[in-house]
Image 1 (cartoon, rainbow, N blue to C red):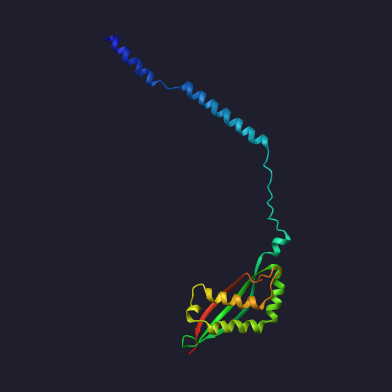
Image 2: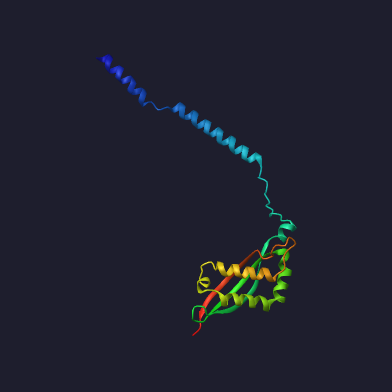
Length: 174
C-alpha cells in the first residue's frame, strides 16, 4: 500500500510543478525580438516625404471640357389648359469650352429670336409637357430650336451638347 501512495503522489507533484525554465526562455526571446525590432526602426531613419501633384491636364482636354452657358431667364405664358399660367424659366446649354465664346456672342446677337422661339415652344406646349418630372419634351424642342439658330462645329454637328432647364416654376394668373 505504501507503494501505491508514492506512485499516485509522484504524478500529482509533476502536475503541480511550475514551468519556470520555459517561461524564462520565452521572456528572453521576446526581449531579444523587441530590442532587434527597435534597433532596426531607429537605424533605418525617417521615411521620405511624399509630395502629391495634381493631375496634369493638357490643353486639348481643357478645351473639350463641358461648360454651361445661360440662354434665357424669363417668364413664359401658356393657356392650353384653359387658364393662363406663367412659367418662370431658366434655360442653360452645355457646350465645349472651345465654343463657349462664340456661342456666348451668338446668343447675345440672337437673343430676341432665341427668346421668341422658346416662348413659342412654351405657348404651344401641352399642359402635360409642362408638368413632366424631367421636362424631356420641352428640352428636346428647345434643343432643336437652338440647333437651328446656332452654328455647327467643324464636323457639322451641333455645338449644343445638352439643354438644361434649371427652373420651370408654374405661376397661376388670376
